[in-house]
Length: 172
Image (cartoon, one colour):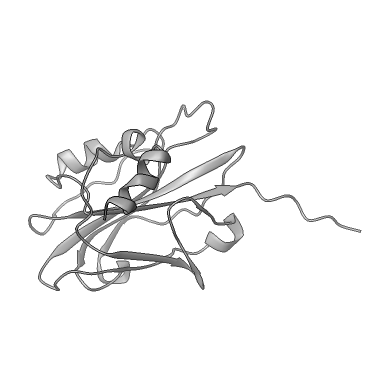
């Protein structure tokens, strides 16, 4: 599993979004037929709908999925770090986000400038989460603070992809 964490360190996901952790649950993320590997490129047009996310684990275990953009509005000036893209809580193990409760609806990547990282972080819950209040703003969300407020501890899985603005199609 050490090979899994290395891209998170190199991509500054560990540091900018989460603290160092040891992955303990398998999480598979896809946009259509495209499998998401750490640091791969996903075009915004491919990510207009929420990704397909499959997590391992037992049905009796519950998980929270958080997706953020730590590079908003620009990687060189991430003044809105992190921009919240999605939160799903109370996902049973061995299932996907459709089996959980969406607290913040999915917002597709819309990077205005530069290459943005989009980070999906999975936490194992100690118990069923109740009354999770969505933040007033998606800007300046803090995954670490959210985890602390909801007693989630360290992540159990994380994957990220890169995305950048697509060129406008040329019209003739």
